Amino acid sequence: MHPYLPATPEDIKEMLESIGLESLDQLFDDIPKDVYFNRELDMPKAKSELEVTTYLKGLANKNCSLSNLTSFLGAGAYDHYIPSIVDHIISRSEFYTSYTPYQPEISQGTLQYIFEFQTLIANLTGMDAANASLYDGGTAIVEAALMASAYSKKDEIIISKSVKPDARRILHTYAHAQNLKVIEVDIKDGATDIEALKGLVTDDTAAVIVQSPNFFGIIEDLKALGEVAHKGKKTTFVASVDPISLGILKKPGDLGVDVVVGEGQAMGMTLSFGGPYLGFMAVNKAYIRKIPGRIVGQTEDLDGKRSFVLTLTAREQHIRREKATSNICSNQGLNALAATVYMVTLGKEGLREVAEQSAKKAHYAFEQMTKSGKYKPLFNKPFFKEFAVTSDVDSAKLNDELRKVDILGGYDLGKSYPQFEGGVLYAVTEKRTKEEIDKLTSVMEGI
Image 1: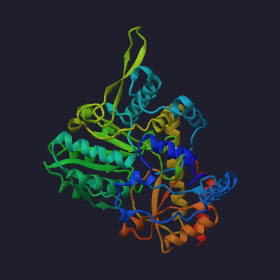
Image 2: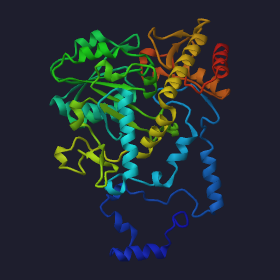
Image 3: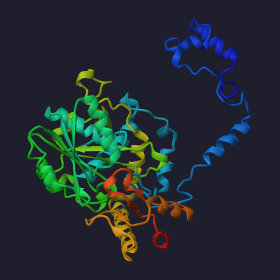
Image 4: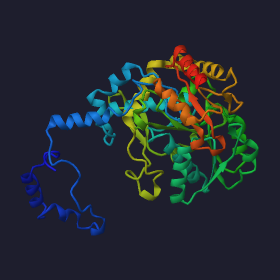
């Protein structure tokens, strides 16, 4: 492979001699021969650095980023504005090279921003405590389900079909390995069917999981759903939320939610072709000792100065594996820092403005899109920044035509919900201008 790989034949020979082997093939003796790749790679033996760079740039340029497109696509990842200070701070070497705070005495900076992140998330959600962070919104839902099962010693999880499809798939995958039973609640007019939920919750239910705003952008009635959930003995009510929506919506902690999870990508993280993202979790005090990951606490050192420690680290690297709350390992530190800088930069008023602009612009787009009658509302429920419409126009054709004028269209709901074939889900954030929205609706009318 040389010169694509930096090791020369002499380097390889020296490394093999140091471990007592004669060839690279001996490193793979444990692999069955019938699964070997028994031919040369279909690529030139060597190219110059200039040729390789040019080739790779050509491949990269086949991707089309949001610097070239106007996006109305959401479905779980959103094109919000990112203040320039976010990238400036997280690009500092002391932050982007740090890993995880195993030794608190030399990790004070990392521990401080994790503590600030936890505090901000707890305040935003109205909960008693938040952990460092989780991998993404989907695995945060799974961790909440596992925590609820451990808390109640029960193995039945109820989740609404209005929770984003990829998160439900992740839950089913984990549940299979953990011997958990997952029951999905039907939806009615785009929201969780509360009457159906009443018939499912029993004393065997460990958790009821909903999303608000849900996958269709609709604001669920968390208070009413929570009352149904809590009819089960030690049943945990879990809500997955869009943190931006909490700039204007009531805090989940004030609505009877026990555990709040969500995807933090909207707070200072680019779409990045799907990740890495940031899951968050906040709980009321009854769950603090069951929460996955870690909790950073504030204290004073011997000199009376403010300092930080790992207060709770109930994971398998710190305690006996059978007593660990989760195998969640690496804190999404850099992403948590980005979210922290984002929240601090905007403050309460800034976050409220982002939420208000997103909601108002989404409702303007909805009104413009549906006023002629060609595109009809798929649901009749209050929504935040996403909404679904349906029409006789083929969804694929619709998005292809929008793409021709550099607009990234909505999500084809038929991919995940066959009953909503022809429905398209659109997202509108504070970044979208009136001119962009008018162009979208004008093109749609002309198709």
